[in-house]
Image (cartoon, helix red, strand yellow):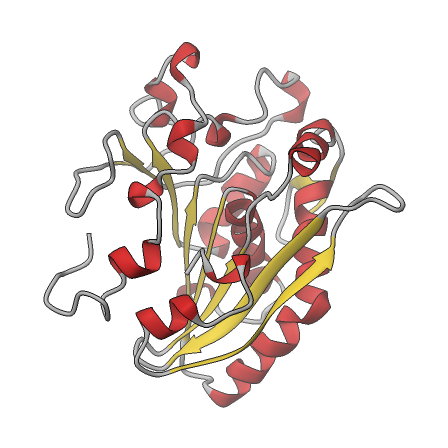
Length: 264
């Protein structure tokens, strides 16, 4: 589902679900600079197969956007659930949320009040997903026990107080990291007072992430047993774009496409 916001089409939804409701992908300007060109995107949909409303967010699309994300990490803002988070990342979520995703989410929530809420994204979309899950929990849109967060390849986004609060805001929260992916280690060599800390829990695939591949789960913050065990000299962009082998993930991995195969 992380692929849905990259194109306003039904390719993934048609491949992955037998019964779903999807209105649109929302793409808005999310640049903190006046007259900036950065855009962010996300979507809400409902999977009637899974009895879940899904929020999904797009990753970084340009080098300019990546540079602005990294250069603005000193600038943090209060998070409603506690702690402080990156201004750029929280603004990215809020502009997409207020730009139309909240309206679609509310529509589906009113139709299906008993559905769980699943939140996901890759890269920039992953930290947007973490902030989204915490936001809807803190502001009472959804009870914490009804939210499931699975974020792929996300950078650091908030301080330790925020990371601690996420444990109760979103008890079911997993950050998935592929091998030597460098993005989850961003920002690099930050000033100690910034206190950027990942929320728990981490799922680390130190392999190709093929069907049935093994992984390690680390339940403590910044564990040295998962991706933090990789030396800096081995961090690479290559593992950032090849989660679950890369390519057309919807065609490769959706259960509807492979009805006789269990999910990894």
